[in-house]
Every structure is written in C-alpha cells, then in structure tokens.
Amino acid sequence: MNKNLIALGLLLVNGSVLAGERLSSSELKDFYTDTTIHGVHFKLGPGKTYFGPDGSVHSISESGSERVGKWWIDDASDKRCIRWNNKSKDFCHYTERNSDGTYTLIHGKKGKKLVEIASTEKGNKL
Image (tube, rainbow, N blue to C red; front, side, top):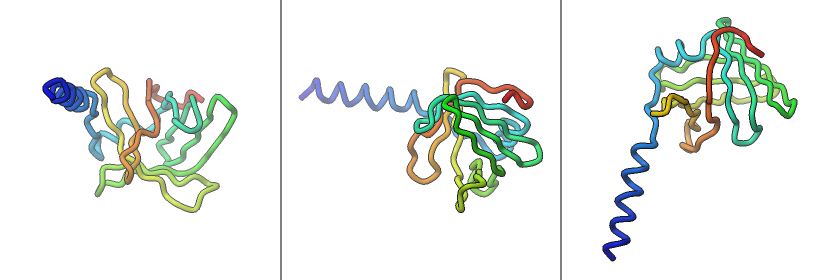
C-alpha cells in the first residue's frame, strides 16, 4: 500500500514538472509570425511549417506531404488557428513552452499532444 502511494505521488510530481506553460495571444503572435517551425507531428512525422506575416501557412513533411492554408491567433482563447486549403474546418490549438526550451502544440479540445516543436527559425526556411 505504501509503495503504491509513493509511486502515485512520484507520478503526480513528474506530471506537473513535464507540463508546459501555455503561451498568451501576444506570445503566440511573436512566436509564429514570419517563423519556420521544425518539429514532429504525431501523425505526419517530421517536417517544417512556415507561418507568413501575411497569414499564409505552408507545411512540408519529410514524407513529402505538403499543405497550404491560412493562420491566425484567436485572442479570446489564446490559440493558434489554421484552416488548410483542403479542409472545411478550423484547427485551433494551444502552444506550450516546455522547461527544456522546446514547445508542444496541444489539441484545443482533447488536450492531446499534436506536434513536438524542436526548434524555430525566423523567416521562410522551407
């Protein structure tokens, strides 16, 4: 019984340490505008995405999949949103800053990790 309580306590402490801090709307604008994101999408694999200052977005995965669309920040919910040209709905998600200097894109409704962002570069580096 005591071992189970200790294990549960360690899990809770580790979970809170690993949880990221959500970026605010102004931080999101600075983070994404005119920036190329290098990361791993949990469905599409490794790739790069460029967020243009004009609201355009262009993403290329290492597997060759390519997507284009529009992006914006939803100030009311502190989410970064995208509408891909081939989709009929908006995808609005949180961005979290991790303690190791990386970032994670978190599903806006389900809370699941979508993309691990390893690094960023200013400008279009596609």
